[in-house]
Length: 111
Image 1: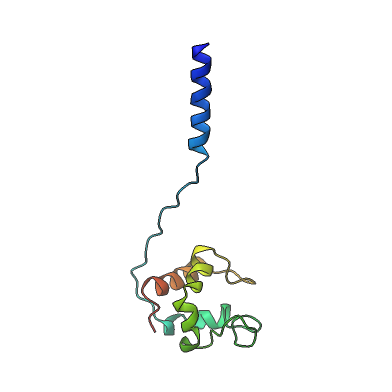
Image 2 (image 1 turned 180 degrees about the vertical axis):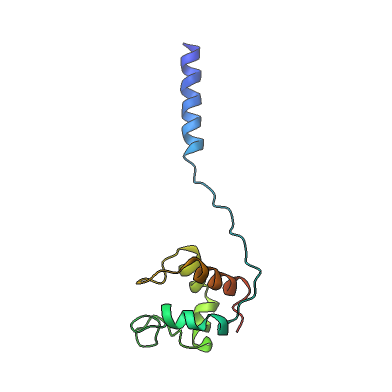
């Protein structure tokens, strides 16, 4: 009877420990400096297109660096593109495009 109870306790503890939320390790920061001018072509093509972040949709205006400052300051670009991967909605980023945006963000959104 003692072995059965000990096995039961072990199984309960194992399930409890294995069901805890996995911690996601922090992502590696990019050290390559990328400026807005270097990724403007990408933002124009993937973000500031008609109906998205073109200033007429209500989702922010990404047609210039100055227009993006609010989204930069509140962290929404990093959250949506890098952390959640939900942007761009109607397109995808290649690994190189993703890396360029990640480096731009990681180095302080250099103008």
